[in-house]
Image (tube, rainbow, N blue to C red; front, side):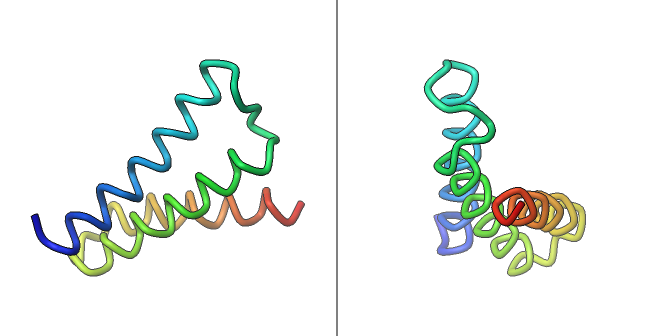
Length: 74
């Protein structure tokens, strides 16, 4: 696996971890750790997508990052 693969894997893992913790009742969607896991995970996944020049996921992960940042500062 390349460095970009690892970045993408780590980013997606953090997002999925947040989702798993939410659906298992460990975190609420309004909890700071949930928001930070999404923000950091989406940011890392977006960076990996930028490095791959893969526009669809740049848009998806970029939007996810912005929404998480908005939620954090709200």
